[in-house]
Length: 328
Image (cartoon, rainbow, N blue to C red; front, side):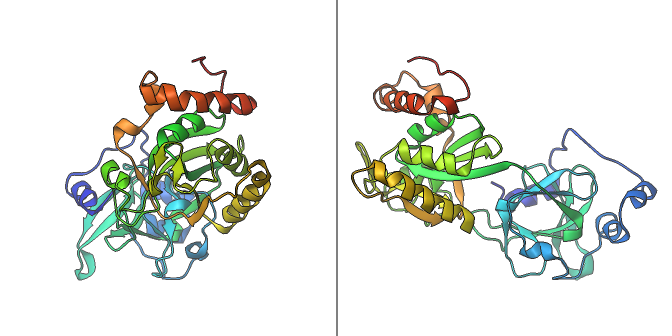
């Protein structure tokens, strides 16, 4: 995750250029851009504050450069800053944006430009929300909304090694990352989280294609592959970091999650105690936690705990798997 020191480093030294570069003359840009788009992106203009409804739009999707169609920001990183311009906490990729020192108008600022075509986008400031603390203040005219089927889901249900191994096998799941969420400190370590003092839960962040697998189906799988009726505990793992939790990103997701909990409740003798919380931030866990089961299938924990869970999951959801699992 980018922070202010990263931004300053890139502003001083430049950051790597992407594989694809788009270069045109001003005459060529004028031929394909509207006058206001040209003024903002090619002549470093600034649109009037509160002049675009984009400030108030938070539907899932991505935002691409109006000039070259390069995807720059995800709506999940968009927030209401009250400034009158669309604001984001992070770009989609570290090298999606380039940074230049801007000393115009008697101020010292960091300009943001599309790293593919050098279109002026806006500026980045260090007054954004945690954990990165950045606010990418972007001209709405410089962006266009791109609908996408790619979504993210953040959930916890005990040790993230188990949850990661399960969700990695599902068709439609693109990526699974182990990490921490729901706590009160920034960028915690595994040792800090396991102390129980940070308030974080061990979670996985699942990137999935909703055209292949739905949010509702993922939640049903989550609730039926761990025990959502035990408070702050999964098997021998005990503590608030092992709590059952669903982080919803909008009101629609919250309503779907409540509906799924209601639907699966009859399959349990005890009441489901899964916590519901608005998603705020995800902190990726240390590298050795990523792909833990894949990298350590013969470890005692994997053999004794993860293997039985995977076997039960594969039997229950064999039609949802990417491919026939390797027998263990």
